[in-house]
Image 1: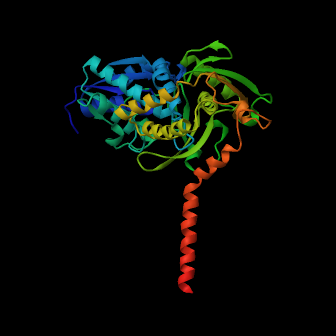
Image 2: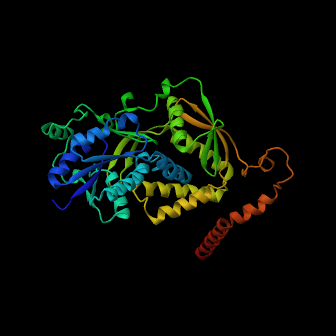
Image 3: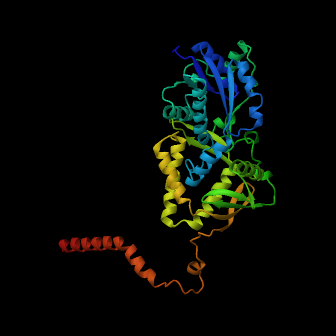
Length: 412
């Protein structure tokens, strides 16, 4: 183990893992440890007393950086325009937050003159790749320390015992059965009964959303207004991105909207099960898809769907700081230019449904689509279109018939 590190900036949460990492770094690298806490909207309760915890664990100082606005404006809203949904279900709550956390951590490292950065990601997860890919792109000169890939501790009781031996206070306990990660966009839950895919999640898994069965019996309608693919108003009231997401989380969560129980393919090769709650995200994706259906032509919408799938993979795999990300976001931004208008959604018993849509850029024309008599569409024109559209099939069939006739003649 290298002893050449003088000062390391640790991505610190105040939880069990990072509480143990602070003294472990000091003991094994003989270095100064600076704690860095990213406020990405995990909530005041999670941040309460975190600086004091870091100092009590042995950190020389603790920097708390508010990243909520940057998270919403520079990551969440641009990603929404791509329509990125990983494996058709996951709204990328954890993956979206990692780039700005890593970027801010590098900034703190440079500010305090550190020569290393550290994180508490395990060797089994995706986050180690996301953090370290960002470090490589932003500050390749910094050494990266990943204690979970180095130390011998492998369980929660071992970490608790490690802290107890050093009289370092920690609010964690051996009875905590879930691993949770929260930010402005979502909260994820893993562990406990979720490690067996045959087990249905108990209600204690869910924290942001009520059970659909317990949701109000009366639906709630919201009017969402967009300008070039970005939410600007809710029921006529202006909202900045952070407040809009918080507001929608609260309203949609109360109707049981935003729950996902998923087994996903991790980047490192294994499958994992997680329960995700993303109430605002589910509402916004439904609304934007409704607006796209009204505004985008067929080929543009098809490309946006393919772009969304590819961008979801890029985000999940931790490739935010790449030229490809810039190209894809530029494409999504261009596609979203006509996405201005109003969408009404209905929230009811865990479901969000688009009920009304309008846009000054709508390509829907009742004059063309009506089943009643019209004066703009000559139905006879469809015959020529179909004949050209099916020309390849017609030629193929003619060749097949000619071949069959030749075969029949040779047999005679």
